[in-house]
Length: 136
Image 1 (cartoon, helix red, strand yellow):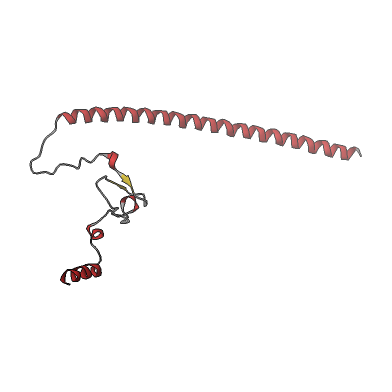
Image 2 (image 1 turned 90 degrees about the vertical axis):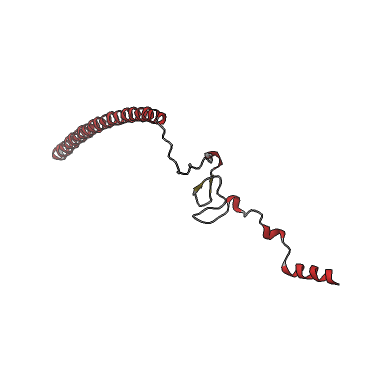
C-alpha cells in the first residue's frame, strides 16, 4: 500500500511541476505578446503622425498652387454641377446630378423615365379616326 501511495505522490509532484512549467511558458508568451502589441502601437502612432504631417504639407502645397492659376485658351471648363445634386443608382454607381440615367445598368433616376412627347400623342388609330371625322 505504501508503494501505491508513493506512486500517487510522485505522479502528483510531476503534474504540479508540469503545471508550473505551463504557467511559466504561458506567462512568457503573454509577455512577448504584450511586447509585440506595444511595438505595433508605436508604429501606428508614428504612421498617424506622419500622415497628419503629410496632410498638412499637402494642404499648404495646394494653397500655394491655387495662387498660381493659369488659364488655357480653348480648353473646356470642368463641369460645375454641385456634388449635392449627385445621386446613387440602385446598382451602386454614383452619378452627377445632371444625369437622368445610369450608364452602367441603364436604369432611370428615381426608377421611372421622365414624361416624353410620345406620351402626349394619341395612338395612331385614334388619330386616323379623328382625321376621318373632319372629312364627314
